[in-house]
Image: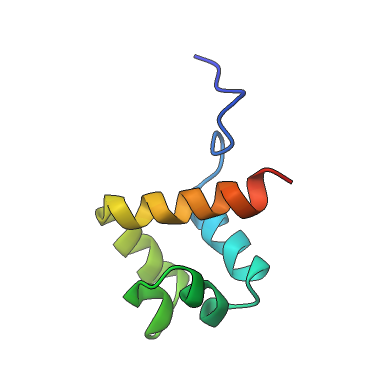
Length: 73
């Protein structure tokens, strides 16, 4: 099934997080956009991935922010 209209198709979660961290100038900037603990307290890619893979609402927020700010460019 082809997903050419899905901006997340082929994107891994770690790539999405790294792109958002870069776009917002670091973890602090991303943490201001999405107020979740894994972005604001001792942030790391590993801890963020672990949390987002278990927490659907948070992952959805991250994916929506990615689509809104980065994927449409």
